[in-house]
Length: 454
Ligand code: SAH
Ligand code: SF4
Ligand code: F3S
Image 1: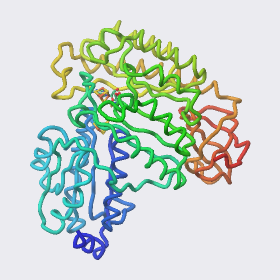
Image 2: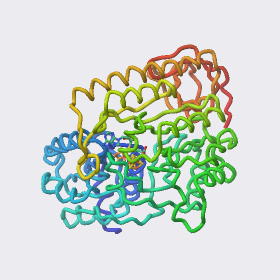
Image 3: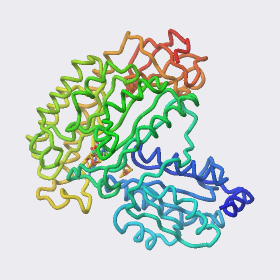
């Protein structure tokens, strides 16, 4: 592949990646960038002049996919503006059954389509596209795990680390298991090695990624469970803050709950998607837990760590959802008092079980319910944030704040975004901040201790 590298570097080719969807995709964009950097491409600060544009796509809801097609259509002119440029589409959209072929037919100016399992093939795809002037597709259901793909991460004290790929849960509304295939876990030693290297390079906060991290270890011969993995990371690496997403309520073990407050690095925050407060709807969603089971988990987590932050995902308007079902969702939100909730109108995905269910709701009813839910979530968020006023919290400085150099921002262990006045705090430092007021979604405070705690 020296020929390819020579071609890219001699021409000084640049790339631009546009990322849609979840953290998994954000991390995969870092891998795509890693491969491109290793081939001699340079990142382009703007899309308009890039020699290669990659759209790393999401298909979780219909409007995400529709938006992609709109944005993709607009790229037709790019080919005329930047002669010889390439357009690539990656991620979840081309990984859907037959989607890559359809996409190539509909958008003749797309040169490369590759799925979530195709990143390690990018080098040979680029050879075919750049040197042989061919259009290429790599979106087969190859379930193997490829280690040592280069990763270009942004200079940040925080990093994502994949621990498990795919999903076996088949929630009836969800397209992910059809796109990302069956669950497969990485070897614990590979994970520890990656985290260790990151820590040596200045990273202190790690977020473990997977569609269902609690399933970690099933299928591995070494018999390491998710909570055992957390314990290993705690003792064997220098990580200061450890987070994970996403965990499924049906699989939260006693052992995992026990890790809270016990493992020093494990942050006091859990993202635990509930989806609905009605056990009847949860059953139709194939979530395999009840409202009571969920509330019991929340109770136990709060017992263990009273100031734990809890965030969630909720779907409104699942087929057959009645006003009573919806009111149960409202009452659950009131009971749990979420720190944040990502709320979605149900979106019909072809190929999923829910798409064929009876009782699809009128759009007007769904948007009216969504507005009621959002108003309640806003209130619980405010109440939770108000609890911080007057408290002093540890903040990991992430970036300059909105008001220029005088203000910095970062997150607490409970994942609250805090902006604070402190001209000399450095990105990557841990500082103590006294909270003095709350904004719409964030906290505001004053730095009281700038000592580097790492
Ligand atoms: N594996 C994770 C995340 C899945 S996608 C989990 O199980 O929590 C993120 C969120 O998108 C889901 O939690 C769900 O709330 C939402 N979602 C998934 N499919 C959807 C659909 N068809 N319509 C609306 N929201 C959906
Ligand atoms: Fe989708 Fe459910 Fe798997 Fe999450 S657990 S990715 S919602 S099928
Ligand atoms: Fe993530 Fe969207 Fe794919 S939410 S897993 S990028 S369908």
